[in-house]
Image (cartoon, rainbow, N blue to C red; front, side):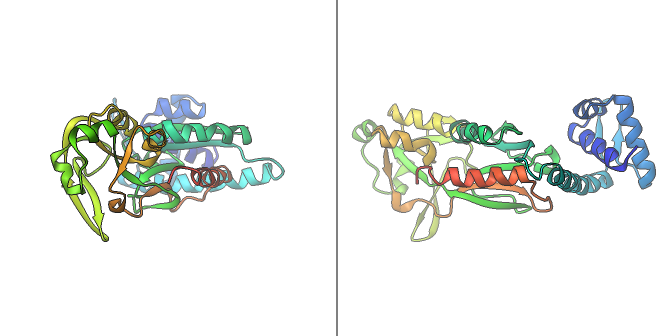
Length: 297
């Protein structure tokens, strides 16, 4: 059995936390996967997994080995891919995670022409509002809206993305127009629960970051839902412009406090700093950077 093959089995079992599922992921039996892991542990002289009848978990040494195996396998695959496909377009699987709202509204429509342009590439997209560990989950790329957040990752800013205050004209007529962000504490507000600050909405005054505590009749974990409620006149929303932009363009929402919007907010592509970017991931990141330039700003 080849060392590279054993490493592939190890990575699959670690990612799935199961010999059965890990073996199935790469097309071998549970028994064969267990045998290859045992051989790898014998060669290394250490235990990589803690095993019980119900679970498989990495040991501390196993986790350290996993964090080094994945980028090595990626580089090995990249070398093979470069040799085999010198005259072909990039191909293979790209594992991507993104926030649900941005994924549904922006990323999914963006991927359709990309996949037509690169028919040999397959994208596995995981939409979730829970930030996933790229290393633990075996992911190639994460898209984040706001700030990069994870300092252990390499980050490329794809485009700026304004966080805007907005309300329907009907709400402003009925409840009055707030004169400053401080007034939001006395208004009905629609909460996007994805914000780490929750109901403490941030804004800036001459570069000084401030926060106002808000409350209201509705909260949701996607910005479009909050925007839809704002259009219905139920309150004021703080949301990424990609969600509110079409509604603002149609006159359904009005922007408030533009001079108080946070600076430096954007759409970012994150990937492990110790992982060599494969050609397929690189072309996707470049494509998304071009695509995101046309987003509302």
